[in-house]
Image (cartoon, rainbow over all chains, first blue to last red):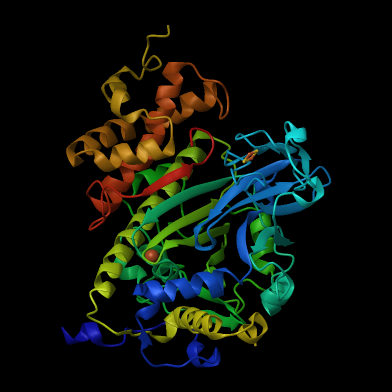
Length: 422
Length: 116
Ligand code: FES
Ligand SMILES: [Fe+2]
């Protein structure tokens, strides 16, 4: 038994002291942020109510006058994101000025105006109120003052962010800091097609974010789906190959098993010409993928054993890169113990039926991974809510979790965003 | 013509059409997750044997994205169902991941094109 507890042989270079280098403590961390409704109320107000939040990519607004509606429960908001004929992107509360009905009723579409279904007031997609039905019946109506309520919105590298502060204390660029600079110019490939997996489950939003912040759990929780690709005898517990903090944000470079060979009995993977297991996560090996690898932000240690960069933007958004492309995670709290998680895995268009079979297999594997993590998080929530533990323990490879918790703690205690970011 | 379940030569797969020939990624996942292992294995064995032929037939007659009559569509959905069955047979040796919750609140909102 005792050999299980010993350090495994590590035969690859890996990163050390990520926690201290990120300026973090090393002690146990409190459970409270995961289980306390009061803490969640503070997060809603002081984190989600003040941080820049990612709502998607510009490709979700493919044409002039495209729009989408996105719920942000933490802020009690339905956000209507529009693109006008000039390509300008704006965000509004999806709330009619007359008596509060929703003006956009579909999740997405193409429209340059929105007519409220309650009494028919009409708004242009720049928010302006342009039509009132039976206006003579109203008293001193000033249409200019009655547009849709705007929400601060800005775009960085194709990513659409909003901020629920009436006048955001810091700009998106200030909020992103160095990361915003270093991650400029990354080629985002296959943006036209994403596998979208949505999961609604009973656990605090940070539990699932934490599950995508470290490779330590891969060999144990994902033994069939991910372990063969993301761990090996040379690095059994998937110690990271790099990582760092970026102000409020953080990234880690994960280990990949470069000796992976598709097992004999994985007959369908072989039939579908899949040679990389789960590593080429976004499923592309083309020229664009090479450009991505060469970018200075990607695999910063330029490790030969690299599989992916997990880039966690504060508070609840991941942009993750692998040799095959990129994917994102949105972790939206809907209650202190409920989460909606949306994964978007960008994929090339299949060019043959064999290819398409490979994509089905790849998507199916993702489905199982999501199921494994969700099942686990629901059990953790139950465990932590029991009160059995006041603290959890974190190792060096889990530094992103610690960084997330410390940053959230800073934000819920800071009077101003500037102070939280300092 | 239209009452043919599968293209000529693939008749042996007909018993699997009703359950396994599902039009979306999400439905194919759900069907696999709910099926008993013996049924998944039976489908996997039968479909794996004809997978190369199915790929060749589809690529030749209905390259990706072309409008398909029902028999071709059924065959393509069966082929993709094999990708799902493989997860159970080759990866987990059971219908779903060990210790996973079921039913669950996870769904494939949009799968890869086509038949996503
Ligand atoms: S609430 Fe919209 S028109 Fe009355
Ligand atoms: Fe996981």
